[in-house]
Image 1 (cartoon, rainbow, N blue to C red):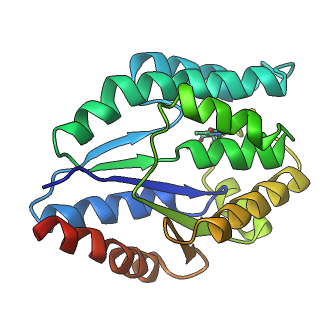
Image 2 (spheres, helix red, strand yellow):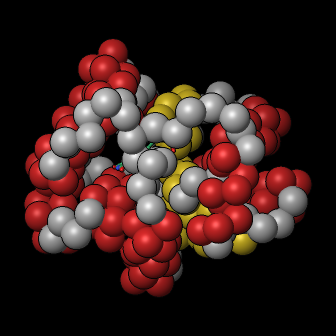
Length: 211
Ligand code: TMP
């Protein structure tokens, strides 16, 4: 079977982790053992970058550094984990990928999209997901859910609502531009409803894999 890259995207408190678990179980029912990974992270280098970019003490981090750090982690993940897994025919579920840079560093921080696209070409080896599940949620609802989790806010979570509104708008714009790759899921639904919609979106890929 051909390897597939499925990415999960969304704002804070959208339920990515819960959906990831559900999808993993669903794929196992189809005898697919996916590689689960996340961004920034997934490699020793990437997890180091994650600690840096989320560290609330690094308030002075400029938008350019943030963008380059995200792509440093991504360059490593693509070469160390994603390409080898996909080439070996494995399915990969990745918690965030390049769309997050277009949304957070592009929409949120105002970095020009063509600069991000250029990084995508060489640093991320132009790797594109086969399917991107975007968990969409009003910013206020997501922030309330995230606050309810009880852990201290990281550097990015400390941003104001306007930042997250721009991120949401950038995600939705990207999804509208690439409807063949994106599936937008209404994250106000129950976790079971969100999982059911995600499973429907996966169906064509599962069917392709068996033909
Ligand atoms: P999360 O995966 O636990 O949500 O945390 C990752 C944080 O990093 C989240 O605030 C989104 C942010 N991020 C970016 O700003 N740009 C990126 O390219 C990626 C992958 C994540």
